Amino acid sequence: MDYLSGGSLYDFYQRNKPLNINTIRFLAAEMICGLKSLHSMGYIHRDLKLENVLLDSRGHAKIADFGLAAHMINGKAKGCVGTRGYVAPEVLCRDKYDYTVDYYSLGVILFRMATGLKLEQEPTPESKAQIHSMSPELRDFILKLVCDNPEERMRFVCSIKDHPFLGPIDWEALENRKLKPPYIMVSTFCLILPPVSGGPRGGGLDHDRVGLGWQENWKKTGVPCQPRPTPW
Image (tube, rainbow, N blue to C red; front, side, top):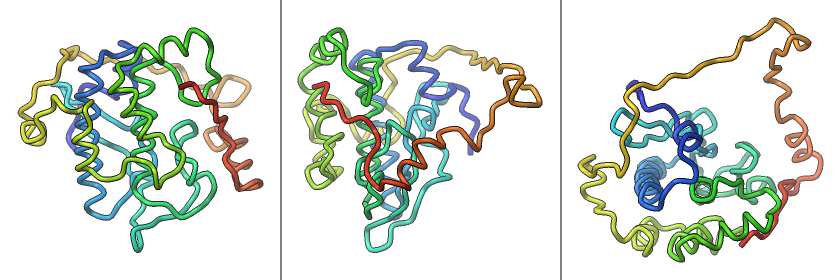
């Protein structure tokens, strides 16, 4: 894989949140192109999130980290995997599912980029006001991606591309990397890592225990354990 000096979309988001609508539209379109290519080969990413989208020096996005990707059998996959807050409800229920779980995760990413908020967090009056200040096209686009019922979720690339929110995108230019990003990348990306100690008492991180609580809850209950507020 090529070295992508722009860092992750998460870092870009943290420096600039909330992102403006033109930036969100461009990044959404590039991620859709990446998912289209992946799905056409019969794979589901299953862990699409801000941290797993990387930017090159010009600001073009590429989906990364396929460690949890699965090949679909008869158009379906199974397995309770992913990152809390980005996972579609049918994955949490341990049902068989299809590639639309990636579009659900995409909707979560767009929501975060537009509001600076997590979709699953309890809404406040301030966050509700911010949500309702979104453009109607973006709001409708996100709603159709994060629909809890996978049968009602946007699932066909043609219908996704034809949505009014993505109307300004020149898809041919985008797919040929000829569409210029509506932002300028910082020329130097610097990641400063905290010191790592040898044991838990010194602040070391036990990676095997991170997120163990909610993963165990999935196994015990077999039902979604994410909060399901309705911030809209």
